[in-house]
Amino acid sequence: MSATRSEIRDGMQIDWDVPITVDDGLVLRADVFRPTKEGKYPVILSYGPYAKNLSFQQGYSGSWDIMVAQHPDVPYGSTNKYQNWEVVDPEKWVPDGYAIVRVDSRGCGCSPGVIDHWSPRETTDLYRMGRRPAVVYRQNRLEWNLLLRHEPVAGRRETASPSGGDVLVGRG
Image 1 (spheres, one colour):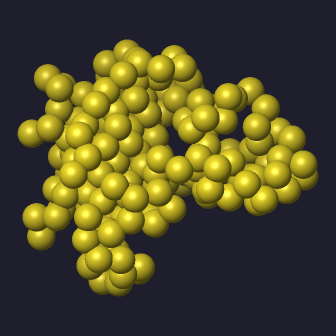
Image 2 (cartoon, one colour):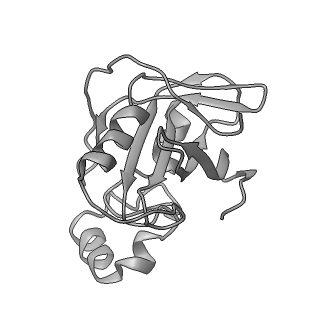
């Protein structure tokens, strides 16, 4: 089991391996990148099997090389230390007031369980995680939910509308 730790690095508050207890009792693990100032922030959530702590460059070096050759704006303005496969770069979004929550799905990365991609169980996990557009830290407790947002490879940003609901994540 992974231990949760928190640090300020590269201008962001980073919480590593935050526990998320889902309704059947399994504890998934997430990394949270957020502004250093306490407050309420919209969340960009990713949930998947690609190992939240595996850098794009390390895990998919050939694809990384092709992408940066074809789209030099992707690595521009970032150290790219926190780049992952098919997700946003926290170094580009956190300064604009977003929190990035990356969750390893069941049986992947730092989350225990059995891999069963897009099964009813896995889609239920994702659905229950992402039902309100905010991340709030209060008394060492993370409360968050989802704002759907899309960032094409070329960097153009488009926003979708948030939905409603509640979930608690982190130390309880």
